Length: 304
Image 1 (spheres, rainbow, N blue to C red):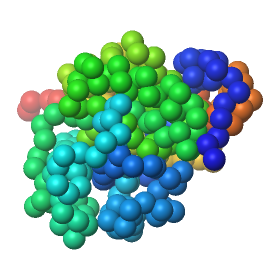
Image 2 (cartoon, rainbow, N blue to C red):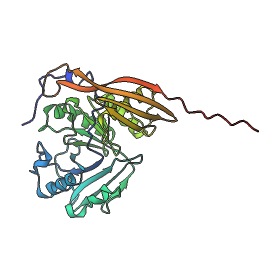
Image 3 (tube, rainbow, N blue to C red):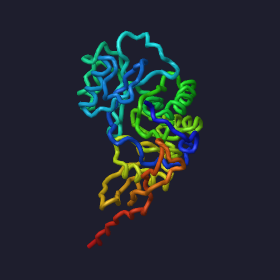
Image 4 (cartoon, rainbow, N blue to C red):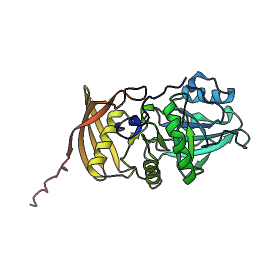
């Protein structure tokens, strides 16, 4: 049974802080088109056998499986076989590829783990956008996500998909931008359009930005505060070069363009505006300090 939300608006209006909440365990993705019913948990393997086998193989390799379908469409695709997309979200040059396979044996997931495009897939130079609409996980994801997915699909009909649970029901509607794995939450139509347009231009927007998947939450927070301080929006311009933790406090050296900052963050409790299954007391992060590092200058030896 789907979990509901007794509060119609407050939990999902953008008042709940979204920073540093992207799914940590997702740098490799397998998207499987399935227009039939979605179970509440994919690992329960109550799907058709060929879909269940793909999900199982993905989970065994640390790949994040997602079911997808076109917004508003519930009929099976005309394609013979199973439409799949794979995304490699590691490093500075993530990639996305897709294809139609006859069955699980036709998709080499070990190649994806190795960072190689599977032979059954073709590289795609355009991003895709996932909107969580998984009603059996949380009713809010469908109530808020379905209209948003349909609105975005009118703008980018071939690049938007409804998807199963991505993590963070309290942040519905959730938007994921692949291949980088950029997460946004509590999305309005205007905020989603801005985020989609920014990503297609190689940038992020900080409004309702949850972070990048596959990165520990404290380091997502570090990146967020570095971007907020500098106003840097380019995807590749911000990188955590080193970090260390002392209890709950995380200290990191962050490169923003050609400048480095020392950023210190720690967890902080936020009392959500509605005490429901979607949002209660939320652990977020606060900025302790942010200091620009002075480059080391070496004295020029005197001429003799």
